[in-house]
Image 1: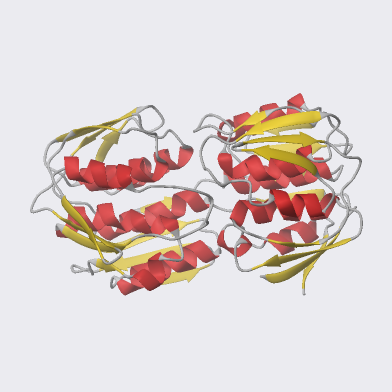
Image 2 (image 1 turned 45 degrees about the vertical axis):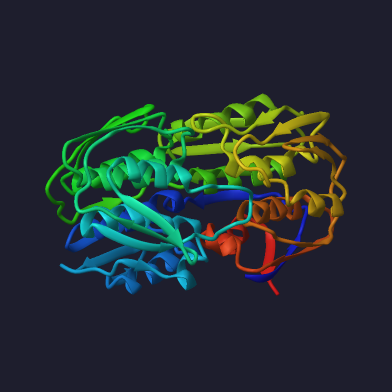
Amino acid sequence: MGKIRIEGGRQLEGHISISGAKNAVLKLMAAALMAPGESVIHNVPKIQDVYTMIELLRTLGVGVSFTDHTLRLSVGEEVGEEAPHEVVRKMRASIQVMGPLLARLGRARVSLPGGCAIGERPIDFHIKGLAQLGAKIKEEHGYIYAEASSLIGADIQLDYPSVGATENLMMAATLAKGTTQIRNVAREPEIIEVQNFLNQMGARIRGAGTDVIRIEGVDGLSPAEHTVIPDRIEAGTYLIAAAMTGGRVTLEPIIPQHMASLIAKLREIGIKIAIDGNRICLQSTGRYRAVNFQSLPYPGFPTDLLPQTMAMMAVADGISVMKETVYSNRYKHVSELRRMGANILVADRTAVVQGVEHLTSAEVVVSDLRAGAALVLAGLAAQGVTIIEDDGHLDRGYDSLIAKMRAVGADMSLL
């Protein structure tokens, strides 16, 4: 995006449409590699991560058409086996092609992934699980090489409920011989999306949403058509923006149970929320009390909303204690919030936030996607004009961010 100018102090009022879930669609795009023919995915957000995955799929020989939020992926009888560094370095989710390529081709060569620098996100869980399915894996020259003449079903226990590892192993096990059980899996809604899409393709998977997933291997898959669920993190970001600005907004479509932890916290701090089917309405006076937050794997409070809630607590009445348990470097935005007048102390993964009367404008720099969202929210609530310097991070996860904010009253523009 470059530089974003925000003049704060405007109440957000009106309707916001929620895009498809970034953390689901990227994995469905990878899964499409497993079936020759054309798969169709609807409700796809126009974000940079999707365009990066399109670039990666094209390097593997996939034909891609992306119009009106619909992706058409034409997968040939033959696909490439190498995910090159120049693409994979841009986005962590690129590692998700390893499971599908290994399952379909019996081999894969994938560069070690990049993405936001928010702390250690080891791929050891992916590698260990694929090895249990019978893959021989080695790392050389910045690439992971995986090979297996045939994947064999296994009983896999994840050391941590990693979302990416859960999805990669699900996809690989789909074409393995026999039965695979994966225990201590992630339970995020996006895991259920992957299961549903694979089952539409002819897979036999059950258990997504619980802590054990069972996969009966099949001989092959067929293309499928699927509509992606709404993005719960995008929706949560906009709810927090309205709460901070004393706004009144309606968001749809949303799936309320996917956002239960945030909704509970917003009600706890004194924000009025009404839910009607796939629609949520929020009304705020702009004043609310401080509460404590701790990120946890789903269904706990999402780590991807912790920076935004820190911005909200920066102007709450009282003191809040925030604890990050997922990523080691989630607080890179704290120094920028301090430039805007926030009173925040950090020790290891714990932050103590003393609410102030108001934030003030400043020039700030975005370090990662969710940190960028936190700075946007702070700018919307601050006094004066805030300039946010962003080197493409916000484009990775928010479809039409400025347009959506302007439509509900924000004074926000690109410089």
